[in-house]
Length: 144
Image 1 (cartoon, rainbow, N blue to C red):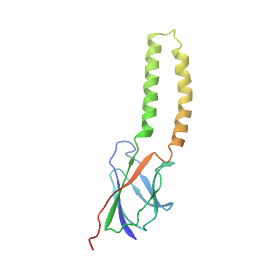
Image 2 (spheres, rainbow, N blue to C red; image 1 turned 45 degrees about the vertical axis):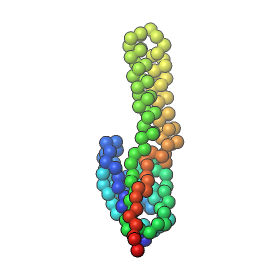
Image 3 (spheres, helix red, strand yellow; image 1 turned 30 degrees about the horizontal axis):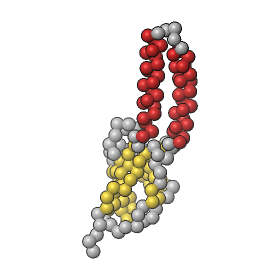
Image 4 (cartoon, rainbow, N blue to C red; image 1 turned 120 degrees about the vertical axis):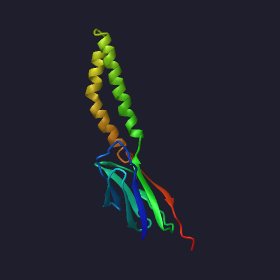
């Protein structure tokens, strides 16, 4: 059994939600924004962070000897690029439609708005276990 310090980065996104920390599939603690917790965990255990039905990939803890080891949990920025790009596209098409009311942009914009929720659900399903990022940062080793 070794002590692991688990720290959640202070972020604006999901500021009011708590991340569940799972060790071997069982909830060990919940971390608020910017919070840290120290857990006693067996070496070789699997650790994962969850937020609702999305989370991180499981990480196997190494079997190194040390005093306290550190793990950071944060939001992976990759999955957020598509919704931002899509929202900007819808705004641009809306501006074109307002500028040229007789154009076919209205039909295109309506089809994007209809399909957008389906695309978001599909991408959340694909990125389900890459939504959060969990990584082992550092280890303080014994000199004995």
